Image: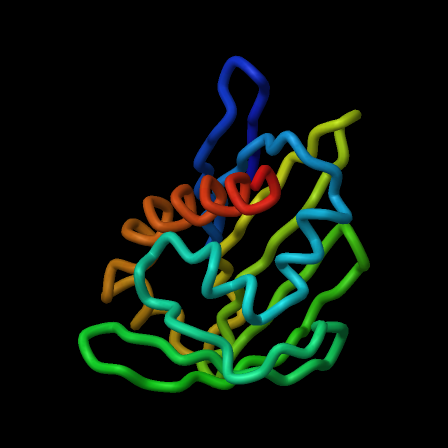
Length: 156
């Protein structure tokens, strides 16, 4: 899977084997960005998909943290998540009962940070169902909006 982002082309979308990623070069240091990613409340503030409503707790996330989010996809519901990948200021990923993952990777580049959000369904219990529902093709739009909102949050 390849990815590309530069000041001339700040956002990119790539598709890989059961993964789709969107990258954005953000004008902020990695630790500022990671503070938002490591906060469940930050997820609701940066969500560009329109499905994440609110955090049910506000603990700082770390490896193994369990947290719940209020969601709405047609009807309201609550989803429990577990942090399954973690490297302070570099990487955070979580999964819920379906076992697919949402991953954020941060690559410092001087005063900027390349942030890559990945929807990874290679770990899912039912990857064929995720593909049949069309999520891999639909998610990149919301992921791009999420990264743009994340950039606005660290700028403001």
